[in-house]
Image (cartoon, rainbow, N blue to C red; front, side, top):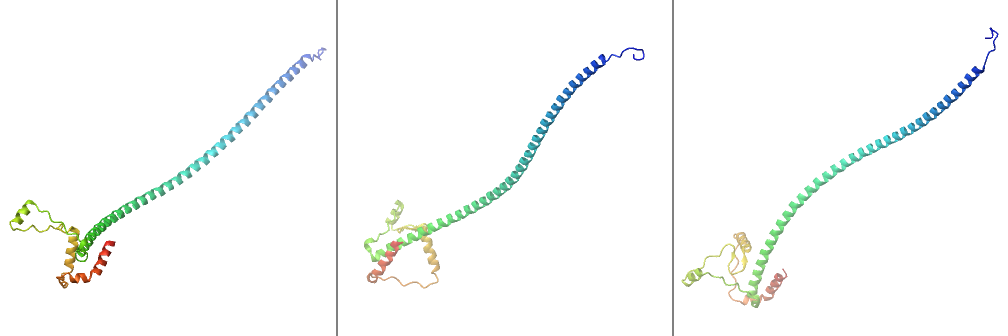
Length: 218
């Protein structure tokens, strides 16, 4: 235009520049807004990441603690099982001991009962000589109808059974003790026969009463 002698017009150029400046400002504002959004989003994401990392760390610690607790529980269960087995063994041994003690106790009570019967029998026999007022004669044997007929015809009663001594109140236990004593004294010299009169027993009345008193204490 200058070569052809015409004026150059800058109005359009200035207008375009102004429009471009406005457009650039708008784009800059948009970029700034996007940058702020991205920054905020990155901060939020980073916070979430850190929170998740903390949760993972906590969960790993919880898993490790749970595994340690499981190992401890296994050891405790093994110890309890061992204790239960030991307790079962102890109970079984205690049961066997109680059975043995019960058997021994029953045998002891049976022996004591037999010994008491013997002592009562001996006391009664001593009372016969030293204290006749306290002597209790043995009850008469109950005879059956057949026994009465047999005795009335001159017969004799059947021998005493092995369960005891008829007419004395002494049970089978005393019979066994007496038989054992007789077997043990077979090789010994027989004692002298008892006195035929009551005189010798009267001389020892004080000694006999002492023996009776000792039996009463038992």
